Amino acid sequence: MTSPDTEAQHVEATNLLYRDPALYDMVQSDSTSAEMCQTLIELHRPDARTLVDFGCGTGRDLEILAKRFDCIGVDLQPGMVHHAHQARPDLDIRTGDMRTVRLGKRMDVVTCMGNSLAYVHDNNEISQVFATFAAHAQPGALLLLCSPIAPIIQTQPTTATVDTLRGPATVTIRHTWDLRTQINTMHRHWAFPSGDEARDEIRRRVLFPRELERYAEGAGFDVVDMSDGAEGGLTGPTAYTVARQTRR
Ligand SMILES: C[S@@+](CC[C@H](N)C(=O)[O-])C[C@H]1O[C@@H](n2cnc3c(N)ncnc32)[C@H](O)[C@@H]1O
Image 1 (cartoon, rainbow, N blue to C red):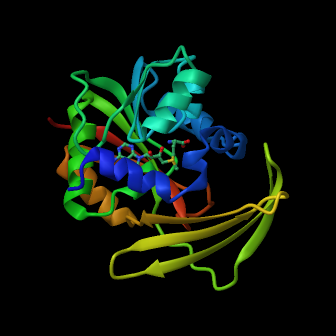
Image 2: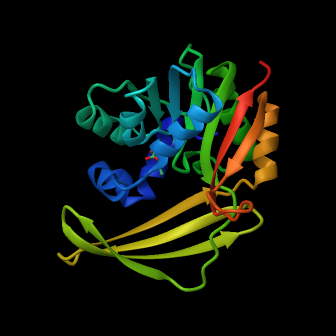
Image 3: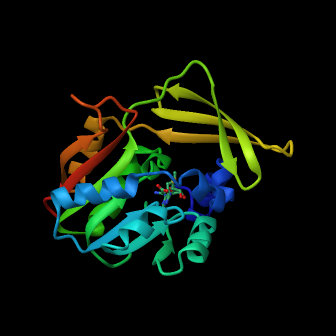
């Protein structure tokens, strides 16, 4: 296993948004994942009071969730955590690696949103992450994941304009898929009005629904719901998984 510091540097290097967390917040500002998370908690554990979010990034979801729950956030990257402290000083956000971190607390809800789980690629390390989830779960706690359950396979690049503090950027995205490792790589090119450019290579491990069940069960959680909002079953590429801790 790479050390947390090396892993943090590696992850930061893959993505312009991690080197510029204010831009991350701007680009993600229309995300509805905190609201979805809250809806799922109301449905499955309405008495929940405490929540820990692993891979919380800049804390943008926690800012919303903290209005309802006592929250702690953990993220690998010191730069993201530093930005979270500046932008959201009232939140309890800590630097830590979800493969190994132990906060010494058990919560009613454990979350890992926004594809954070997909940054852990190795099977054994994924098991370690689920052990971390279990180590922070009260009996009967809810585990909420938002993660890739199927690859994005696109043959043609897509282009969009994204508003940034440096003006409108032209962003071109293509995906590649390695079935052997189940890594879906997003290749993203940024072109800014100044002529500056940036390239991202974001490698995400896809865990198919049955694999997610296996990892969850191995850590003492039973999956009670898996949904991507589509009528009539999962279509992917991303889904919310809801699991309940059934044993320590
Ligand atoms: C796409 S961001 C999602 C952040 C946040 N959950 C959101 O939805 O805005 C993925 C986050 O996972 C974090 N991450 C990746 N590997 C991690 C690890 N081993 N431990 C903790 N956080 C990790 C990254 O630092 C990054 O902030």
